[in-house]
Length: 605
Image (tube, rainbow, N blue to C red; front, side, top):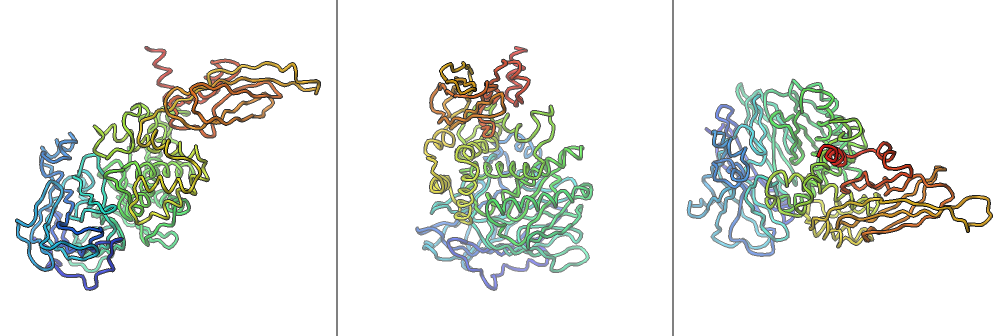
């Protein structure tokens, strides 16, 4: 049954100024039936051909069909989801009454292929020409699957489930199936969404949301969003509403009552994250930002102008730190997902890698980067755990693969959430923090709202710095090069020919080695007993290198510069050697996660 607001498909009174840069404007009217867990509705979209060629079809994503039955690509790739679907927890979207330009399309004029709908056009759509497509839809909402569903409290995450146009990138249609590892890609659009919800529901969404009318049993909400890549909403009765403000942006929060004590921390980290990203990249471009308590997941999810996050475990301090990191990560996605809008289907590293490295910067800046997991000095952060997980995979796969080209979830996460940020950090270390920050700011500013790809990123960064990225990309982005540098030995002798200046001079020989094929510039540091340090640059290319220092004090240690401290270096414990021997070195130098495992294995095996 369609609610009272859905009498007919209407045409927007004033279609926004759509163009190849913002090629679509949606008008959606929908009704959420809480008893049947369905959304029924109508949609009209005005679409401009953003390519330089004629189009004979228009394509839409029907993501809920990934959970329609076990034959879907998603179910074939994810055993847990397949089992849930086998148990009857299914989702699907049914499409009917398709119309183009007011003329109904017969069933022979369109076809559904998995999670995609293709509509044939009677006449080719010329570049920059516009058509109006309308349809009715019914969505069956599952208990939380993928990125949408309802939870045990009866709250709904309505995300990636409405039928939306497949996006175009550089003249090419991006119409891939919904894979278990894949993310999402669509073009910037205008949304005018009216949805009828149960009267006691609260809601947050993409865009500016307001309640426009209500009865004893239902309430009608309207959301308008300008230049966003998708529309999403979280709603439910089991929620408390909060509102705040930051720099002219209205902040809205939907938090379950059992988590109400977390609100001050949530509000603080949202503001800090928006501030950091605004300074580091460019100011948040929308006038609303929302957070929703996702009780149905223990992770986070980025959506345009809206993030959702779960709560971890019963320990409040532990949960708060993980929650803060999740918020920082998902807020960073408002740039590298929502407004720069790279192709997450084909280049997930370009989105997740940047969100991760910015998350770590935010958590370090605001003091929530550490939480003990095993011991106080190591395995003490999400960063060290992700590093451990990534290095354990031994760089089997490049980070530049399409999301579904990884053989399993473990390999995908290791590459995209682990190795990608370490590679970006290595790039930052190699070219310098300030140069990297300036280059990234230029890239972000130049390509916001433009759907850049890896080629654009490399070109932009190369133009903004003197660093030759070609070899770096070949080794670490398109390749699987591993990194392990070590200080192998340190020897010294008194320089008897130094003269009678009254002081002593020592000649110090430091031998450094490169064990794997990954090449990164290094700085060798010689620490002296008088507290001074000497530095020598090394391009890192030779397999073996002897560095000679002249010092006025006895050497204490030799180290690969801990200020750089490449996270991708697989055994950082070998990066420092002390004059007094191996035991002192082990006690003095902080062990990292990989070394702990290697050390214990050497004792037990």
